[in-house]
Length: 242
Image 1: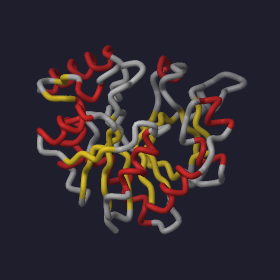
Image 2: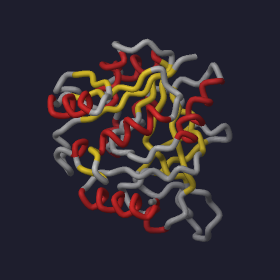
Image 3: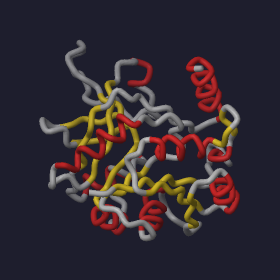
């Protein structure tokens, strides 16, 4: 079984235009992600999928591989699927371009889920214990069944404790996905569902169409850079680690 990592990156981010090229400790954000994926040693190929000539040139300049994609892709997953046509791999991993510190152990655990032939899509989850994050709609929550297949994703705190108390485990969704090639191509051919549009969570499309998502537990908490404030937080964390 071979795996390739594709990092979707677009310049025109609504909340943070030019985010992939933002400087993080002396390197573009996208370079941190590419180096983390490449350094894991898990992939036969790592590529950045972008519609921006500036991002393309930056990636090529630091020695990475970039693939130009259409400017009208409706989502990052569609961009990944388009780029996947140029790569020969059984498993395609969508490594978000705003996860500069993605860990090898998390990526390895994600790929291990495909040792089960029935796994078509897999993603990551981590324990969620911070009460502030629990009620933050920007932190996506997931509930799972007894086999760790996703039952539902939401921006709300799920499950809801009707009678109060603290007898529930909460999981934070870490938005790194892996797909069997056929499952990825099937997913992007499906129309968006009502739940997906209500929550603005693309992964709900799979559940609405009966495609299971195997959730893989990780200690990695994610460091998504969505805003300039997140970038400052990442800068501070890197300073602390040095």
